[in-house]
Length: 312
View 1: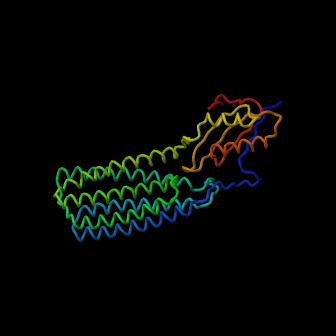
View 2: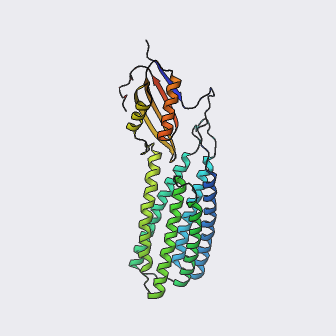
View 3: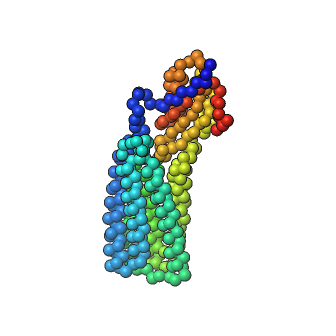
């Protein structure tokens, strides 16, 4: 008897073009758009306020808001790109653009934090006189705007890495507004001009922590890292225990298209007595129910794996 292999995908039909794209969450997209409009709008108000009052702190914060506005624009473009249908050159569509946007956003967060640290050190070495009253007024307005933007974004899908990176940018701004208010109050009450750089450093540390998490997660997806929630051993055990005809499972490869779309390829060795269609139905059912796998490519074999690296 010859060695028999057959490959099956988890979508039926004889059509040679398969659409693997997944619908973009329109609510997430709308929330990012509103957040972007508000952020750019207040950035202009800060620039005007900074120029009128001569406050360097407000102009610096306007630069921070500009970077956040660009980050939100990038997030919105990511959702927009992801709406494009799959084609011959991008069979999974454009969803990975969301992860690329999250990665860039994460890097910009780290750069913003580095800039804040640099500025804070410079102000320690050469103290700058801050006009506390206009700083306080604009900072309070900034806090209100950032709270509104954060509320808009926090109502979206928290598992979406693109939306999450945008939220962290806004959280950084929100903390920046709180720090600016505290610094302005301390300067007004006690003349403590050093309060501005000290509180800025605390915000920078929080931004670094959040930015690193986004960079780490998005980079893991971009390099085709396996989702932590789907251990290879657990997949093998589940299929061998729950699908009677399965004798062996090997060549398991799991990766993510986005943070919430997982894909898998695997080889299964099965008994001769059961039809492949029945086995595939059971395997796909187990993978979908237990591991939330959205797309599988399954190679069915009736003899032991002939490859040297079967258990990779």
